[in-house]
Length: 404
Image (cartoon, rainbow, N blue to C red):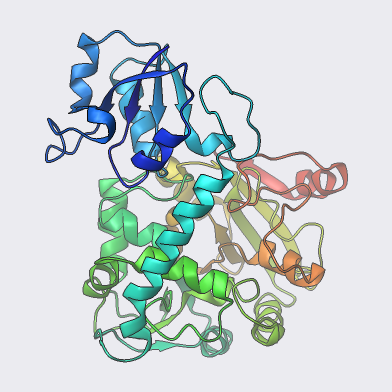
């Protein structure tokens, strides 16, 4: 079979080792103009994606690990009918022996280890105080929740996916980049309003309280120039709080933080009517006792992906149908950040609650790794959802609207 490999980056040399002898590699495709025209392993030349139309081949092998953008390029160029193999898909089973002669798990582990070691090396000067980066103070999650209990203020949170959208890059599968969304996120990040708390992740230095796996995840994201890019978006005039307020359990070495944070959250909705605005398969607070002390619970189902596309409809429905004395809990990815801000301006107490419910399930189960949760979609584990009858019965009783 004739094939082209898409991606002339770090993975290429290793991926070539796993190509079966029955596959003839004609060219390597890469959109990086500095690589085009050069020869790589075994004298194979690198060409522009646009030159594929002049070739005859049977399949495309994508060697890039973060390959979402490449999927779009392949579709744009009209190669959907061609057989496309993504080497990352062969981690668990070797079901295409004619293409890959060995299981690929070994390859993935090798690449990931190298990236982690490099990220640790890059991060070490900041963690040890040899290099310093100027960022505003980030106050604790405990102080944030105590403030919200006292003054009824709202919460907008920022994580890596939100920063990547601002910087014009895709990251999370549940929200594609969008220039209008990026504009709002950038503006809100610098808003100084005591009634609206802005939370950012403490990802700059000082990872001693985190599990090593979680710390490595942060280091991998902040590698290169990202630490400085994120810092440049912040304002010295804003009091920031810890965005990991909604992730108080899994990333930490022990449960002491979660032991404090979950009870404070429960106080926030004690005897209050709550309206949950969430993705279609979220089921926030069902199947556990997280909301057991709330006065009442209603919920609005929104798109599981790209909720920003329905933003105006979602906001309009809430303003026209939900009373302002209800506490709004919003779990909608990057859309939640903007929605919480604008609803706070309308007089609601709106909380960008994120994945707190999943964290609570893991906390109760005392798990040491992220696991699937029956009847709920867990974004970090799987994009699949399976119905659970007991949860669905409660969910349907509480559901007041679908805006999808």
